[in-house]
Structure formats: structure tokens, C-alpha cells
Length: 318
Image (cartoon, rainbow, N blue to C red; front, top):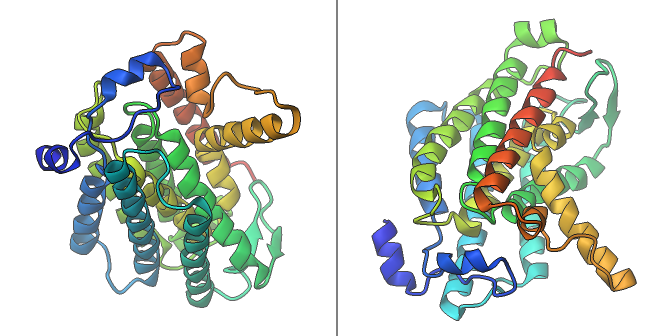
């Protein structure tokens, strides 16, 4: 597949000329490697998940839809050899539409009084029923997760390992949330059928390991928006389904940091004409400070592990 993509894409993914000079060596590397990840995920889901479980189809629907959006974005970037792919506003509008429909489906199949409520870590009985406003909130979580992972995917291996770490963590959380005995013991909200989502989390780890073999530095292929948008959307959809939206911000804290760094950079430059970071997202800032690419990647992996453990700790700290 890598050879086929290299031939069809020609010059591969465009490399930012204003970025670190070492990145110019990546010129010609093919993108759309997310196709490999999503193919593995889909096959595993069809083989081992309960296809009568509505949560499985809702999460797969979000994942594949976001993957198609990312694929179109990658296609435009490769064919036009520019960083400007799909219109940002149009892309966000479509993402919110897809995410909103997914949240409505989650509310419909979930337990009344819970599926449209926001749960809080550490507080067992505190549920904030948002009603139909939860559709907007849930859609925001899914879209934000997709784009946060997308922003993180800027160095070889940087995004896929934290995604696998988050998927592994949510694999544990989904299984516990879907088991009435464990949910009662840990005093977390029981979501019937949510345990089946652990299969998808496991599939992401397996597919991610296969992709990492070729994405390890120096990368032979990039996942592109095809993979990053889809994987982030998957994590967001799972978090909404099992009522762990806030915990997602902890377990996926690295992605939050990357996204916030971009937001802060843009706002600061527009208001003051000055940049807070040497370059955004923040992983490029550390490169500009003199960290090697491997130092940035491995240290960010460590941060992802620590945040995942912190997120899992919220299951017991009540």
C-alpha cells in the first residue's frame, strides 16, 4: 500500500517551508496512512464485535465519516501541493453535523436521565442534565477530539502512540462502565452495552502497532488527516457514549495541550501581533528550542502515559 500511495501521490504530503529545516528531509513521504489503520479497525470490528450493539455502529459511523473528511482533505493537499485543503469552515460544519447526529443517536439508545447528562469525576451522584443542549456539547467533544489529534500529528510517531495509550485506557473504562458489578463497585455510571466498545479500543491498539512499524522515524508514511481526524473522532464518540467526556480531557490531555497551544498562538497574534510560542502546535515550539524530533516524541509519549494513569485514577477516587 505504501508503494502504491507513493506512486499515486508523487511528491507526497507538502512540507511546511517555515518549519524546522530537518523536516525538509521528509519531502516525498506519502500520506493517507490512516487508510491502513481504519481498514484494520473495520475488519476487527466486523469479526469480533457484537454487530447488534448500537454503540458499535454509532462510533464506527463517526470514525469512518471523519476518516472520509480527512481523506478528502489529504487528497486536496496532495493534488494541489498546498497546506490549504478542505475549507476550514465547511469542514467544521460537516464534522458538527455528523457528530450531532451521533450524539442524538447516543441519547436515543441510552438510559433516560443519563444519556443527556454530564457526569463529573470524583462526584458519584452529581449529574448535570443538559437536555437537548447536550447535543451541542457532545458534538463539540467529538469535533474537538478529532481536530486535537489532527493538530498533534506533526512528527513521526507522535500522534499514534498517545492515541493507542488513550484507546487502551478507554478500553478499560468502557469495559468497567458496561459491567454492572464493576460499575457499582467503582461508583461510575453503568451504561448497558458500552463494554462492547472495548473491542474497538483494542482494535485501534492492534492497527496502531501495525501502522507504527512504518511510521516510526524516519517515517515511510504519514497517517494524514484520514487517520488523525478519524481516531480523534472515535475517542470523542466513545467518551460521550460512556459519560466520560471530562475524563477524556485528562486521558487525552496531550491532545488538549496541542490544541490549546494553537488557539493561544492565534488569539495572541491577532490581539497583540506577538506569538506566545516560537511555533505552534507546541511540539514545533520545543523543536525550535533545540530538542531533537526523537526527544520531543518520546517525552510527549511519557506525558501521555502519565495523563492516562491520572485519568484512570479518577475511576477509584470518588
